Image 1 (spheres, rainbow, N blue to C red):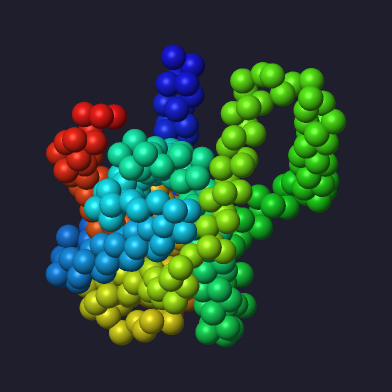
Image 2 (cartoon, one colour):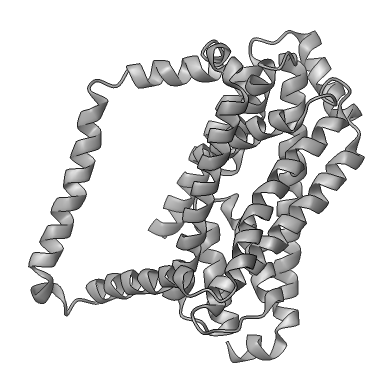
Length: 338
């Protein structure tokens, strides 16, 4: 019961943050500006959103193949369809709680493919590390492509509010070092007293998870198809870029924007999704703020943000629900054994 209450509170918290960001953008708008956002959202050419969704599924399939390469490096032969459906369900679960999707998709593969859960988590940790590196590379690329916009960026609300919140923290470096020292101290205590606590179940579970992580991480150095692994790692983010860029054509005011603008929206939009679960509220606001740098009005930019977010989120919901229904039917024998 405590766990359920905690999860409900987490959902309410992230939903509340999303609603706050919606209010933050909308409360200063006039009725005419609100009508403009609504008419732009309704009147958009959704054929381009459909193309974006097709590209999204290509990126998901590419991620599935890359994940399979990692799992095969551990000596297992999972079904591609099970990995793909597990991935879609994972994205669906991530809309509810942070990192729930990673645990969910690993649990599904463990259930249907009989692969140890800890090893699956290790492969996902490897994936996330590569994604963070890819996001950093995209950020650097966006920075150098738009050096002329850096000074203007400091004038945007997104920067000003972040700066104000940071300035409210007294001696932020102290929090950083205290956190590091606490983790180091806890680690040293566990090492020192490991023999006295080794008989506890929780200790054994932590030990198994750590070794499972390491085993999964080793998969990166055992992959048998390095070329295809690198290819899919690049393709995933190229697909993400085109997912955002093609939607620009759905509004006349943004149809002239190039791939360089798509990179900026991709990078900062991804950061927004990391900050607020599912990006609700904050993603459209960030897109509007970024497009201001490229002379797109706040109302049109905000409408574009909602078009991007809605298309992706609706398909994540639908594909996740459909995958949950299909998975047991496509694994009748395995489902009965499980």
